[in-house]
Length: 309
Image 1 (cartoon, one colour):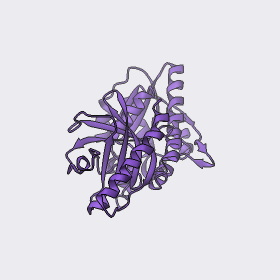
Image 2 (cartoon, rainbow, N blue to C red; image 1 turned 135 degrees about the vertical axis):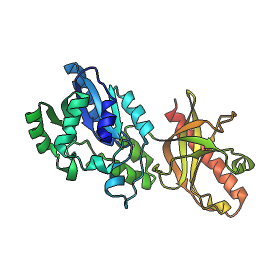
Image 3 (tube, rainbow, N blue to C red; image 1 turned 120 degrees about the vertical axis):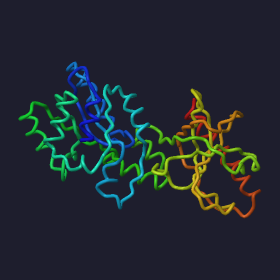
């Protein structure tokens, strides 16, 4: 069994307090659960652990509904480590795993990860047909010797903080709401690849960011952004869209770093999206576009001057 082979590779040195989930985006709701997990594990002198998935379960259970990621596996693992989680196990979500009963799944966690406790959210369920809800897990815990604790959802302005709510905010280009739900700025990570160098002609050279096709993006438009170059933070302006002035059709993410003269081609680049400046639109002439980009740059500088103090 693939899941057992994966779990057998992990050999925690102490008993563990675990949580299970995709944790897409590691938003405020996730953060509350994870920090509680970490603190409780330390109090008990156990290890804190997260069992997550390399692919989204919905890709297996509902392949007709394409779901884009807020954060890929690499970003999620980095965020989990930043929160102080001791053990991170990323399992492939396969039809075989989906067919496991709740009992068998927690047996494997006890056997391979030394699970002594499980912390979950209010709507959590695991196992075949989502049979392992909170009540079922509590009964299994009493029988098999592990505790189950439920952490309530985080509610902001009357709305439950969730990955779905964040996707909706991104679709509307509402970066302030996304930031509130994340507890930080929304980020994009990718490699800088060759473009058509049209930005240089316009007087605003850009870095063309290659993203994974499953990466969720905010609505098309121009954004004030913060670029991470090495250990430095730099003000930038990012265009997301098809560049209709030039008759484009392929959606791209292009970033103009305002105070940078070096070469970024081939490097990894992270950008934090602070605010949307405007929607993408078609201009009648290149000169009109250049003038508007100049205004975008000035507006971005004003917004980011407060952010980057």
